[in-house]
Image (cartoon, rainbow, N blue to C red; front, side, top):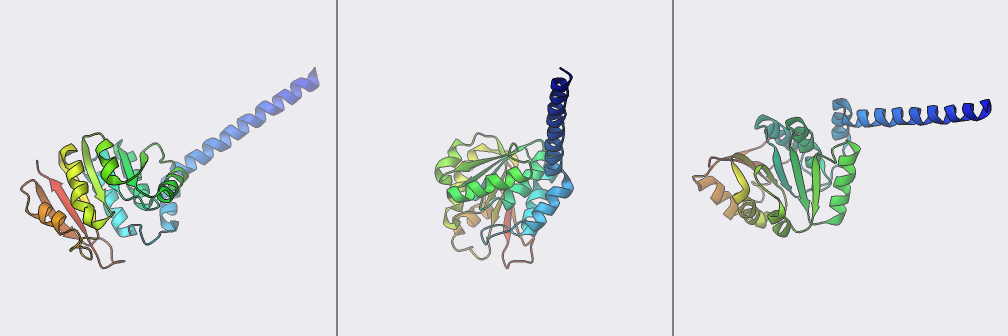
Length: 214
């Protein structure tokens, strides 16, 4: 009997130890130091946003205390991880959309590595079809997908935008011709204040940041 009890205690102690290790791993994934190192070491592709732009997105989300965000164009999740950190801090949620299954899979994997899988939802499919499924209200949008569809993306999400929402469009200098309809609209509409900025020295390009007045 003593031997059986001893084995039972050993098993229980082992399970407790494993649970403690799992908690430590979970805690490490959500620590600021771990996440910042993960972002620093992230293996970006040419489709990912730059570190400077990603930090700008994070700051915009936090400064405006955004709660419901949409990203059109996930790539492998560098932007989603950065914005996810911000949305976790504001108590909000981000939906990131991409048409490529491989991109969605990579984004999910990277979000799980930093414990943000409950803060960011990945949506697979053509954004022109999946955007209408996103429920409003929405107070933050980042567009970095097919350039000549930017205006279409905006018009699909616009009815769900709150007053005070922030809309960010990437690559607006190098791809200005492809998104002329989008840029003309956000720069002339009385419903938006828009500025074009360069937040990263890594690329010769910029982002259009629009504030929805009403």
